[in-house]
Amino acid sequence: MAGEGSNQDANPLEARVVGLETNVNEILELLRNAASNPPPPPPPVPPVAPAIPAAQAAPAAPLVQGVPPFVPYIPPPTANLSIGMLSIPDFFPDVEAAIVVSIGKHEFKPQQLGKLIPSVNSKATTTTYALEDGALRATETAPIKDLPDFSSFMRALGVYFQILYRYVGTTGSIQAVTDVAVFTQSYSNLLHEYSRYFAYPAILTYHIAHHSRRIREMLRGDYSLWGDEDRALVGPLHRSNMFQEVKPTSASRSKASSPATPPRDVSTQTCNRFNDGKCPTTPCKSGRIHKCSTCGSTAHGKVTCTQAPPVA
Image (cartoon, rainbow, N blue to C red; front, side, top):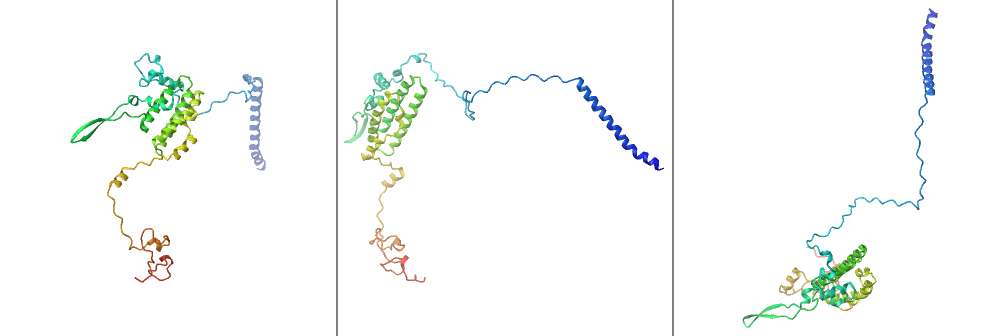
C-alpha cells in the first residue's frame, strides 16, 4: 500500500517534466526554421542631405492667424473708354489747369487756396430782402471774400490734397501715396481740433505758415511733416488773443434769453459757513450775518462755541 502511494505522488512531477521537454523541442524547431529561412534584408535608407547653416537658410514665413487674404483693387466701372487718356487737370474741370499743374510742381502758394473752389472763384453775390417804407426791397450784397469761413477753407484744402494725391500717384510708389494720405488726413484732423479753440483767422494764418514750410520738403519728396503740429507756429495762436469761446448750447441760449431774476435779499440770514468755520472774512462775502447760531455772539461761530445748545 505504501509503494502504490509513492508511485501516485511521482506521476504529476513526471508529467511536468515531459511537458517541459515538449516545449523545449518546439522552441528548438522554431529556431532551426528561422536559421534555414532568414528574413529579407531591409530596404535601403536614402542619404541625408547636409544641414544648411542658419545664416544661409531662408527665413520661415510667419504664421499669421485671422488675417484675411489680400483683395486686389477693382476700379469703378465707367462707360468712358478713353479714361486712360485723361490728364490730371481733366479730373478737376472746375479748377484752372495752370493752377492744377502748379500744385504738381509745388509752386502753388497757400494764399491761392481760394482759387480751388468754383463758388469762390465766381465771386457770387447774395440777394437779401428788407422791409423799407412798407415795401419789400431786394439788395445785392458785396461779393464774398476768398475763404470767408472755416468750412470753405476746409473744402478748398480738400481739393488741394486730392490734386496732390493724383500727382504723387504718378510716381508709382504705393508707399508714397499711403504716406501722403495718412499725413494730410492727420493735418486735417488737427485743424478741426483747432477750430474748437481758436478763431478762424488765426487758423488760416497758421495754415499759410505751415504750408509755406512744407514746400521745400515736398520738392525733396518728403511729406512726413504735414501731420506734425508745428510748435513754433502754435505759440502765436495763443499770444494773438484769438481764443474762440465755446459755442453756447440751446439750453444756455434759452437761459440767457429768459428775463433775469432779481437777487434775493439775504441780509437778515445767518451765515452757515461762518458757523462751520469756513467763512472767516468779515463782512460776509455773500451778505449774510456772521453770528453764532447757538449763543448769538459775533465773535465766534457754532463750531467753536462753548455754550451748550438750548434744550428744545
